[in-house]
Amino acid sequence: MKTAITSTGNTLDSPMDRRFGRCSYFVIFDEQTGSVEFIPNENAESVEGAGVASARLVASKGVEKIISGEFGNKVKSIFDSLGMHLIMIKEEKSVGEIIGLIKNKK
Image (tube, rainbow, N blue to C red; front, side):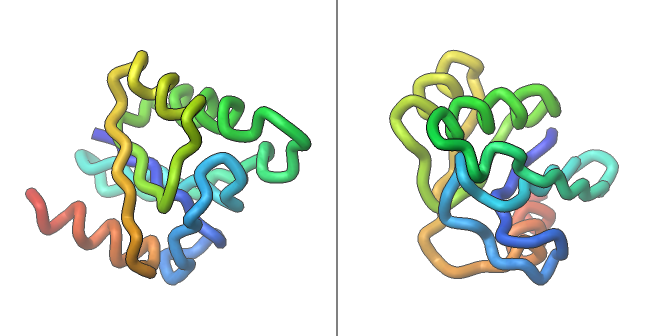
């Protein structure tokens, strides 16, 4: 299963970005292979439609779960229609800490 995590930077030490559509990076973690991919979010500076465009980007990567601090209403309905799980984390955590939590759930 692939999980996308919103991130402020392109390292495992980077904090999770609380924003979905305007995050700096998406980190794609593949639970089966353990691979981690950092994808710059080209939609972060969009005047409008950043959330919807970011949802399309994440969906195109085969992601089944998305972890962020918050999601807009338009994005929620898109992910609901695709059967993708949204997970909101309110605490300050690094991308590496979140990946560690995912690994420990197995």
